[in-house]
Amino acid sequence: MGDLTPGERLQIMLTPRELTLLDDWRFSRRMPSRAAAIRELLKRGLVAEAFARRKWRDAKDFGLGSAAE
Image (cartoon, rainbow, N blue to C red; front, side, top):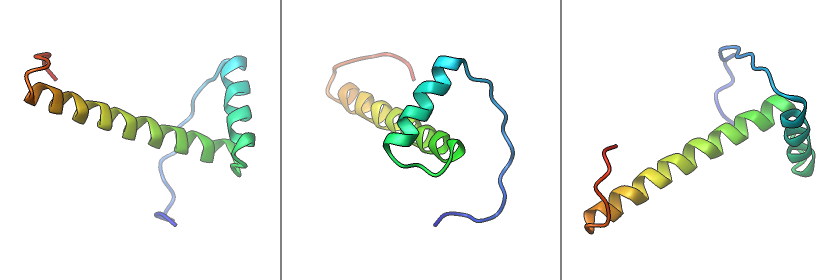
């Protein structure tokens, strides 16, 4: 299990639709709480962004792009 020290509290506002989507996602994966679901989605988003950035760098290495990062 990860770090057991308390983290910083973060408060967010969600629309009713966002909350429904979050709860549906959470329940389909048997996540213990909304906070756990949000942490998992945040982690997945950050990993996906890092992967996409890495893939773009690889493409530029082969002359397939020139956008600044």
